[in-house]
Length: 142
Image (cartoon, rainbow, N blue to C red; front, side, top):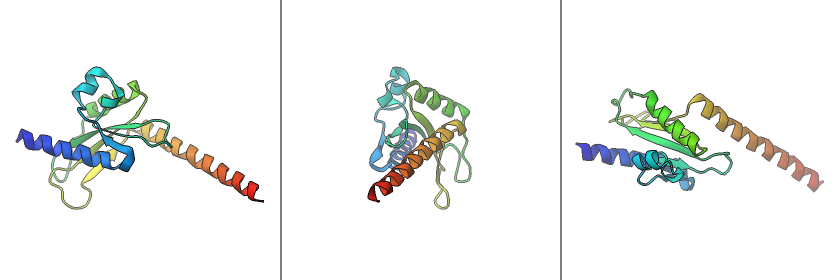
């Protein structure tokens, strides 16, 4: 039973990392090593590196904490990944997978309000810069 739970957890870490496409990666030997060493490469279960964000994103993957209709969420998971992420200047998130859910929403990813606000600010800054560059490009064409 424990091996099956580990396998499901591993698979969900891979699924979560794949959200980032080529910019996402599963953190090998994550967990205890990241907690103990504090090395950025071992923080969280997966990481995303999007160049348009001011920081990388690291996340914890949680699978099977509940059933097909609900998930138990622990504040300590958010506190832990946030503390680790801040120590290495990264954004943090937690992803969840409903156990045995086959249809509808089966997986979610969540950010605390402050982290999500900062990510939206990064996106807005990129949008503003892109708009300015388009305007400058149009001026040069005239």
